[in-house]
Length: 172
Image (tube, rainbow, N blue to C red):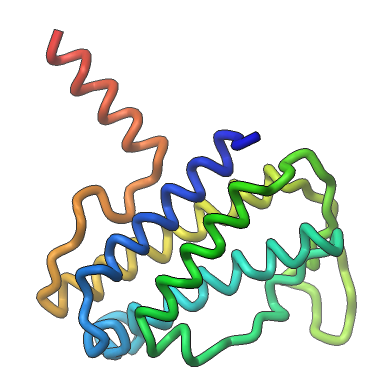
């Protein structure tokens, strides 16, 4: 069953795919000094790898967001990144959302293993917020590079629903 959390995460991933469809490989990989010398590809790699860590954790019962692959191909190749987004969305749509998980605390020293208790739904909420945060940075990078953003890019699904409800109320 596709829960609201899964639906909203899949919608956010589709926003990323839509952006990539209109983005040149050069702009995707270009570093932007005004944004901490980061790139769209770097932010999207970070987002994708958090989802991959999450999905691996749903199989093992333990998520360690710090143990990411840091795959440079995701950061450099927008086609490869788009394929990753699509595959993640498909996996999310098949996910069982009613499950407890353990998550490694990011503030724990590297030589320790401090774990917290979480759930699939809670981690999906984290991933959505994390993704929207990075999309905001991606949006700034793209605009500084002269790239037009897709309509509603980087807006949280709850914000989009609110705006739609307000537009509908005004239409009546």
